[in-house]
Image (cartoon, rainbow, N blue to C red; front, side):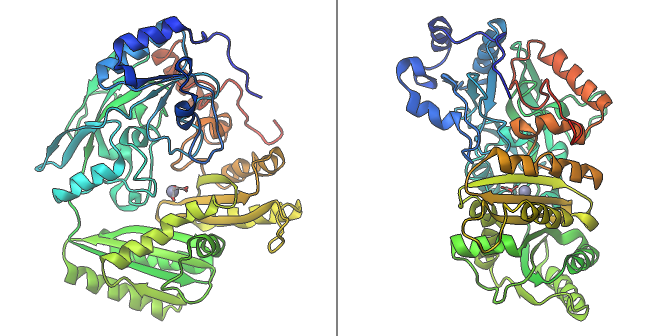
Length: 493
Ligand code: MLT
Ligand code: ZN
């Protein structure tokens, strides 16, 4: 239903010549120079669900170049999509029409690291896995970890308020990002690369850009607090046959592992069946079960951690809530448990198309969304388990129980309006009715912008719109998404 907004100018040779005059020649990729093939990877998202038709990608190498690019776009009413690793899951980092892509990929240097405070300062285009390797060599770790770490960049992580696998222990980017440098659409630079943990001097402006998905400006540099690398890591893989048992295990893990618990993740039998099928990965699990749980601990004293872990395992054994359980014997096996969990989203997308959701819902009813969705799709006769001709192959649930964040992945042959309409806005309405929010970590992007009303009141949306108007009055930054003109607030709309 979206139409290109004709208030934005179309790209001309003159515009391109300007960008070529301020950026290195090879950092301007334009269809006028027959670079369509190269442009394609910037125009399409990771899932191949969203595809724009941008004719121009700019790869500035420093903050000043970003500032010149944005100012020129703003003055000339050229719409812009900021892009980082382009591994997002909601269509936030690719253009909808012909927006100019400004990629931070050419800005990938680490600027400073302080081994007293653990504060790391780096360019927005640094790849998360590279930052992890850098911190690790110095005895530290990045407080954020996710399956896409080899592709995603810290600027995109910050802009989408990424959550990930360590959130339970190390918290959100709203608390770990100490400072940001951001370029506003008018070219102004907010230099706020603070290294301080505490600051009570007025509004915390940087927070606005964490999770703004490039709608307010472009993050160019990040100051992030890195914790010490744990001296002892333990991982446990469990299987259990009911959601009630999952909750009992979670409560006991929080109680007995307290300060050392670093992750409490799950995937269900539907998710695991795809991992087995596509990744050929089963060991050490022997039997099929309803739910699989991965618990990890990070501590500073192995003996102390082992004792706590054994006490916890004894407790859940006595409660008879677990059918299979394995404690990793070394780092290699710990990694293999994680590979299994991190392979779930990859396996879910191997059938063709996948509809992905990342709902935050209170623990007690968290899994019901999967049960109700399967029922709905079966009643509509599009999901017939065991039938090869079924349009929907699988409805997998997995995610971050410890953070109350469930992923529902609905794997289909193709993306179709019929299936989309069966899922949305039903799933958002369901979430609202169960006191949840429609995105726990993936963000809004093109996928969920119109459904914002399911998670934010009209007063809050008005405030968001006013902030947007203040910082981006020409609305050049990532248009059509996040705060689109048309919002859907009720199923009947
Ligand atoms: C995950 O938890 O694995 C990530 O959010 C990625 C995904 O769901 O695709
Ligand atoms: Zn996740």
